[in-house]
Image 1 (cartoon, rainbow, N blue to C red):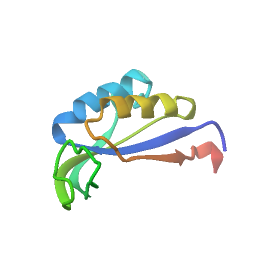
Image 2 (image 1 turned 135 degrees about the vertical axis):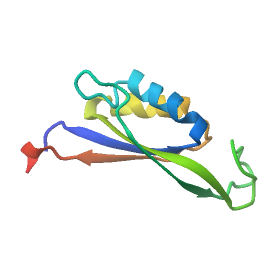
Image 3 (image 1 turned 180 degrees about the vertical axis):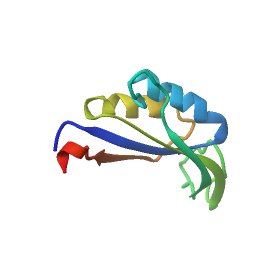
Length: 110
């Protein structure tokens, strides 16, 4: 497989979407040619139960919480992935954001 791209997926509260997209772009993610902030977003529900030592941004400790979130799907060059993940963690309001990293194939890898 070539150096390629990494698909990055995370979920954020709706009021944090622009902040997280700005952070991703500033670290070199979500760029296609002359376009920045490239991403697909869709609404969904995040579910979690914070433990006794957690400090949740939203929800209550010890209870199962269901929160409206926006799923952000974007990408970056593999060599930028660590910087993009670090930028997401800095901009994300959650104490423990879920971030998926998925290697992508190009048509030349087939």
